[in-house]
Structures are given as structure tokens and as C-alpha cells.
Image 1 (cartoon, helix red, strand yellow):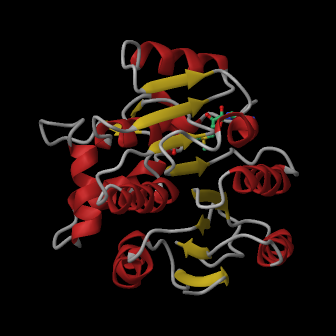
Image 2 (image 1 turned 60 degrees about the vertical axis):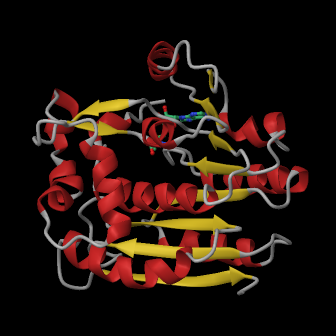
Length: 280
Ligand SMILES: C[S@@+](CC[C@H](N)C(=O)[O-])C[C@H]1O[C@@H](n2cnc3c(N)ncnc32)[C@H](O)[C@@H]1O
């Protein structure tokens, strides 16, 4: 396990993922009934953007750094920026909330959160950080097992983020299998799977496999800040959303062009969104 998210926290992929994730939660929270958030590859709680690791790559500067300074921000992104600002009350950007913190801040009294993280240090940090909060459970275990272990949830409504580091060649396959198992147990579970856009051939086959699934509605979003074949690191990332709450896709139609323009790093950046299964 070499991947450390602290090198990448707040980069363009985090901004895209976290803004969409937070909005999904908000839309689900329009109903008063409780929900459970599951995060199978949780990372840690707060990242120091001025620390050695984030400073080494400087990736956050082209991600949350750009949004931090932007004017006329669309409401969906203003909400996400406000969630980051909550940890930077003096107005200078230093701390970045990872997905567990971002969602913990937004949980209501009736909601619950289950986190799993395999890296011992990050799992410990999360355990200490959320100690004493009964609604938050932290597990040092394999995130791919989360769906099998905890679905269906008693609340009957769940939002599950799968966000592996993609260090292993079979990570996409393992995600598919984990989602199969989860959806068998809870067909109406809302799922967000994040993935890097690097190997476009492998992705084509992955998309074909998703499209053949007997899953309910599946929305695909790709968000590239450089053309997909540029050899400069992570050019873009995608989200596979199962059972996304309405009207997320209508909102994203106006928000993603704005965000893509803000975060673009070279000509040829683009985004797309379409239904792989069950267009509404
Ligand atoms: C991309 S990072 C997570 C970022 C976090 N979800 C966020 O959005 O802020 C992936 C994390 O998965 C952890 N990890 C790797 N393999 C895992 C596994 N099989 N089960 C659980 N966690 C794993 C890594 O240690 C790393 O912290």
C-alpha cells in the first residue's frame, strides 16, 4: 500500500468528486428520514495543504486553490467551497477535508456513517479523530467487503462512496464485484464510484461491463482537465453513479461546464455525462 492521499488532496479530481458527493448527500437529505453514508476507502480526515506531502506535488493549487479564489461561483460549488472554508476560518486555505470529514460535517442527528480504511496510520487517525461520535464507525478493514458486511442498512437509505487508490490492475474489477454484491443486498443503494481516466482501453471494457449489468440507473460522468492522452499525470477522472438522486444530472449540466473551464490545464479539456443503464 504505497498510495497516500495527502499528496493529492484538494486536486482537480478531489474537487470534482467531493462537490458531486456533497450534492448527492444534500439531495438525499431533502427527506427527513435517516440515511447511512458508507466510505469504503476513506483516507483520513483533514489534510494539511501546506505540509510536506501536499507541498511536494502542489496539486491542490490547480484544484481547490483555483476554486478558493474564483468569483461568481455556482451555488452547488459555493456550498462545497463553504464546507472547505469551515476548516479555514481565517480565509487562508490550509486544511482540506477528505470525504469522511466533508460528510461528517453535513450529517444530521438522524444520520450515520461507516468508514473503512486499510492503511493502519490513516485508520488510526480516523479512529482518534471521530472518537466519541456514536454515529460514526471506523473500521480498519478491506473496503471492498463493506457492502457485503453492512448492506442493507437499518435506515433503508444509503450513500456509498467507493474510492480506491487504483494501485492494483484489478481494482476496477473488484469495484464491479463489490457493487454487484452491495446492490444484490440493497438494490436502491445510491453509489458513487470514482476512478482515474488513464488507460482509455481498459475503461472502454469497464464501461461495457457496467452497461451489461442488471443494475438500476447508472450515470457516467467524465471530467478531464487535459486531453486524455497527455502524459503529464492524472488528466481527468470519472464517476459512476448508481441511483443518483434527482435532479443531480440537471444541475450538473450547468455546473460542470463552469468547473471544467475553471480547472482546465490545457486546450482540449472536456467533460461528458450520459446514462450507461436505465436513462430516466
Ligand atoms: C483515494 S484515497 C481515499 C480518499 C478519500 N475517499 C477522499 O475522498 O478524501 C484511497 C484510500 O484507500 C485506502 N485503501 C487502499 N486499499 C484499501 C482497501 N482494500 N480497503 C480500504 N482502504 C484501502 C488507501 O490507504 C487510501 O487512503
